[in-house]
Length: 522
Image 1 (cartoon, rainbow, N blue to C red):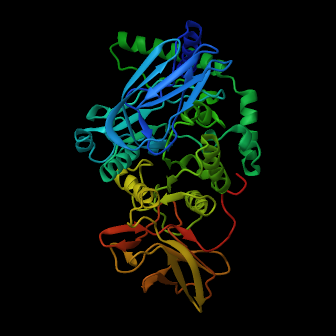
Image 2: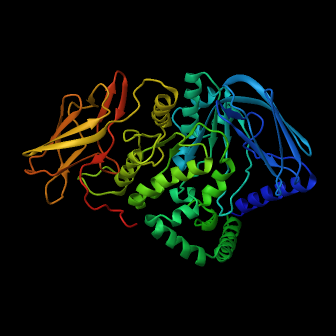
């Protein structure tokens, strides 16, 4: 955590030193190998001495501006068409910068927590994927983890071509999404990765927006107390004392020819600079790229918010809207991954938190424009919160982008619950977005449905397909059913998909009831 503070200080000092020395500077997001968003008025900005005239030249365009009282300058490029022809950009102020190997194409932000940050090198077939990562027109840049309440203007990073060496450490979901997009569109693609493992959604939202959100009050109140009482130097001192004792024991063990003792103390985590504090990531890893021309964002997060799933119904849409408001680029596309199946499979249907978080994600589809959800309830691993199959995850995100942003006609939406009809002891559930029709994987009958009566106690149900878009659900234990749930577990056993030729997309987990939620009020 001390390293993070040093990085922030170095960045601030570097900008200030350049300002005093009369040296023009741009943030890391602008540089060699970058991809500019096609058909977009791309902002280019930086710093120089106060009142300095700055000229920007690229592809026959000439722009001139003067820095303001803080030394800040900004120009806006005229829209350009996608091209594989490398461009050069010259920026002249107190000094001259020339950036080369610039391309014009599609730019996407890849954000969230560890499942988005999970690298190609940790995913399925990492050896084949990394060895084949030879895509000079696919460009990658990563924003380092910096958590702070002070908005950052810059970061340490650079655009690079996708090679076996650069791709292996890049976001797997981002890389697989971008690679296929590049190959299908046959234009350059740029990917910006700023994911942070374990991050809370609240950390990605401006603090003033959170203070206006009633459901966020418990979280904000908790953090107010933490900020008033947290004493990191005290924790560090205690750590140093424990480490000294352990080192003395380890040295004695070596002298005696014995193995080193276990229980080496762990360096304490500084919550003030971490990935849970409200607005820390908005300021630290998002703010430095806000305004850079993009097509849209893909997002994989929610695990850290599962215990606050009910609040996520409002927190998550607020996050998306706050990004869009700050970017001033309209309702740019925003596609997310619904939580995968995880943890132990239960013998009986019970109330758990992850289904409530998935529901909150799905409800966001009806609250905002230009959004989409990739359902991966069939991709998870019960013993690992990080599914290795990131290719399927990326493919399902990409389907949304290809249809909504690039006018392709392919299956992209998972079926969603539409309505139900109750006749006697049986319930007929109807679905939207079924494509060519519903399909049961592995068995002939649907698995994963539960049903309840007035006592609100769910039991596993029998089910069968009824035509293209309907499933009949019943249980001999429930004579008068009132509600149905499907895949409503942390790790459900479920097998219902839409099928379009060889393409299958899983049915979105759902419930038809409005019974009290586990996480309401958290």
